[in-house]
Image: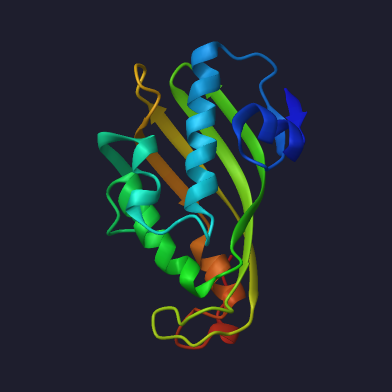
Length: 181
């Protein structure tokens, strides 16, 4: 494994985020898979670039599947996730990925773990007025890629939603008295 600076990642994949752990050797196809996934994540986590489903559809295969039932239960495709996430970012207007802790790829499976941050300084979130609080969290994703056109076919997402929500003051009925293990 090697690490890539944000400049190296930008030059190689068009995404200006550091990667802490990355395979030292990839096939040409694996490079293309990683590029698609990193570009998707870069757009989906950008309050400026993610304007909804249309922002990422060029990176998604027709009929793709998104699964994150506990965190985005109404999103069933990668495009629907981007749409839903654009609404979250209207509340967290400075939300961004800090870095990718690990990106790994084997054949047409890309796995990653990322670190993100954002503050509730934009609009309301589910009826909660801006709290001004900042959250810091990590998440992970596993992507299956179409082997012919290098687009996202399936994405499983996992992240610690409740810890993030607690940091942002979004846990009801009494955020400051709620504890999570």
